[in-house]
Length: 366
Ligand SMILES: Cc1cc2nc3c(=O)[nH]c(=O)nc-3n(C[C@H](O)[C@H](O)[C@H](O)COP(=O)(O)O)c2cc1C
Image 1: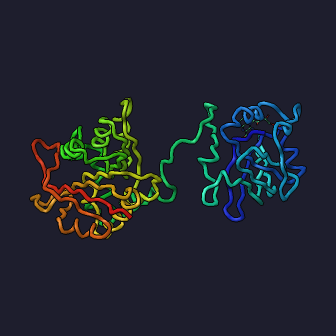
Image 2: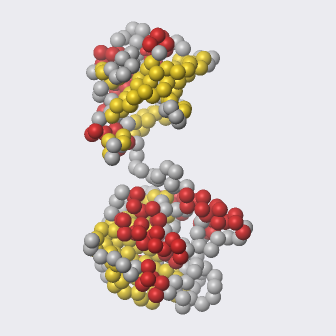
Image 3: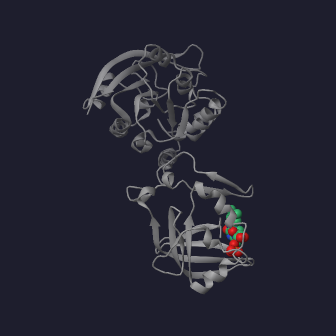
């Protein structure tokens, strides 16, 4: 039978539960055999899966629809066409008013090599579909949008930093989130003029990654002139704004909530990484982490184009100032600094422009 109400319920030993209406035919078999199997269909099995949810075993022998195989328990046949099968020994039955909650210990799992990556089931290769209710619709799995147990780390750090002394943190996290609730000074409703200049000079070669893309103006501009671009930022509010700006545009960049210190897990390489105001927000100890992360996503010979606040910017408001020497030190091994030039950040505070360094740094071929 087709079951949508399935959940993992115990860590060790691994247990999974299915919730089945008492009136169905399947509970009888589970109770008699003391076992059941869970078989994950892929996208190509959508119709037959739905059919198994329409027809009862009381009137139709659904086992004829599939090639079956048996595992250790012998009593829980599994569907060979399904990319992933779990064989379960019934350990507990919870009797609910209209349903049985059958809890099974997973005694074995079966998955062919072709549906795995690095010895683990790969959701892309398995290509399952999911059920949403109450609209009763099937959906395929979309793009990777974040790494579990990692995506929240930056947020966690920002929370801890922000609450430590109650003051807004110097560079990251809560301060940024608050700024994006309003309009940060660098949000100028268009690209930075230095980025436009770099693009016009042909220095930005696709595919392009925009780290700390904010609400996406630079990425939107680059996509608009035909470049393939991914913009990432760890502030969800910024990415939400970027996505809504991108909506309806014929050539829009992709945007993702992502930590720039964890680019190695993006699963994609780029020829150019642009950075307008991310590097200067990094604390000292994070700079080498970022440089390593950067090296993991640039193709050999790829270039990092970065603009940061320079020490020539008077006053103490805004992000920390960075010197040329600091930049050169960060990129002293395995990189070639092509140039570090004086430049200006545009802001939305009238004619105010801020002193910056604009750098072109190429990753040496390995
Ligand atoms: C998408 C889908 C999900 C379903 N999920 C469940 C479920 O979680 N629990 C349940 O009792 N019935 C569920 N059903 C209904 C049963 O699959 C259906 O009544 C089936 O005919 C029962 O088969 P049986 O009588 O052979 O056991 C689902 C049906 C569909 C189409």
